[in-house]
Image 1 (cartoon, one colour):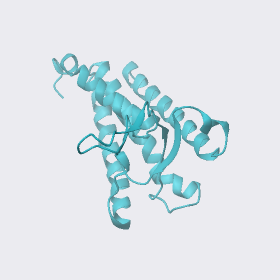
Image 2 (cartoon, helix red, strand yellow):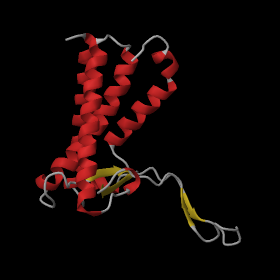
Image 3 (cartoon, rainbow, N blue to C red):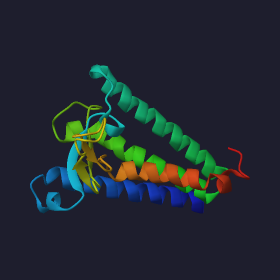
Length: 184
């Protein structure tokens, strides 16, 4: 296997192991010291980003199967890129995205069965990081917003979500450098 293949596999495995260890520790220690740490706010997401859910029982199956198919497509594409000797930066970006997708798929496919609350493909994604840097109620005299609660950076996310976001951001920031010569 090429050096780029080893880089990809190592990065994916490192992120997957780190993601799953953190999720299992946070999930299985609900009343521990972990939850007194700043920026830790344990929750489980039944849907996708920002808690958006597809309706009905079929919605969860569709979402999980879509995640599986998308991950397989990304994995096949990644293998082809490694074989074509595409720039290492592109391989790193796609590896980050795939690692994050696989981390959340493990939750969706297996956590319901492992933790005994749902059948296979019906698990919930464990989220725990909440960087609520500041929050307040708008003064009542401000039009439209008066008296409403405001929270800066409300999303709660996990290592897998971060890996996807960093991979996409990395690809966007360096896309001119990566795609100047390579034609995928």
